[in-house]
Length: 412
Image 1 (cartoon, rainbow, N blue to C red):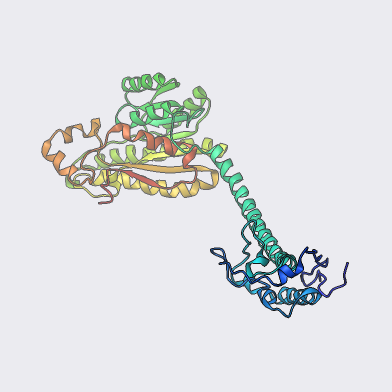
Image 2: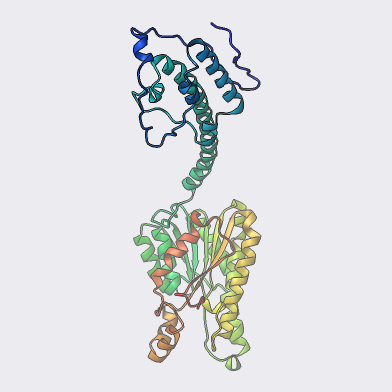
């Protein structure tokens, strides 16, 4: 090993040559000394000026002096930073071509000039590669942590409301004898939930129960007046006793008497308020000990677009539905810490028994659908998938919200 000035300083990161390049003997040195310089165009994308060009082109530098000057140049560039590495990074010579011959130098020049430059470029390449690996490792660690969380969430949260999304769950549905309540109950059963069905008409409830059992689920019929807290409490207890648990409560019962406020009686006010708003309170209050106690549950309250949009003749009805929206918002915040989500669906105009008479009149039909951007009324089966979504784990991060299913009526 030949002593030299360029040993590695580990603290300062300088590079050096550890071995003196060997000179290769030539059969005919004069042939190389008298050869005319051969000019070749540099490869595309390669800088014309390469490290060491100034040494290769100088006729005064040769032999041992060449190596000494070269080592000094390498040390200087290692200290100051190679301008080619700062400006454009590492460029390799084309495969099979010696960089030293680009300007007519002999093989001893190629051996002496290319290898030190390759050492510098190689070090820079390894440095950049190391940084890229470190960045990739850091990004990989972050993404693996994110994948661990998102993978765990995806395993627990169905991303759609397909069949089986509610497997093993039990739901109570009020107002399930017809219309939207029946559509919701059947949709929950088709998604895998057993259902306890409540309404005042037992015969109509039996029809809904047949549709639910046709989907392969159990159904319990419990005639109930939702304006009575005692009857709603009995409904909840029977659902738990006969179906084993309680996970979902759908407060859907509602009544309407359409008339100007001046023509309504205090009894009309009390009747609509007791069924529409007090009925929702009773359903939430009766199920509270069970849902809060097990620290999981879903409450779906059925409001109306008329809780948001005014319409003559529906003043009291709209007031009760607006109360449901407000109750849902506050109760969703209150029960969030118990992992119980409370949300509402606000349907627009749907083809149900309650609206059949109104939409049978072409003039009323035209006037009401004129305010709906979709230019049609809804179908009962369109509410089912939304109810399943709100009843499933897919909506675990949503609470206190009212979703308007109204063909754009509330947004117009």
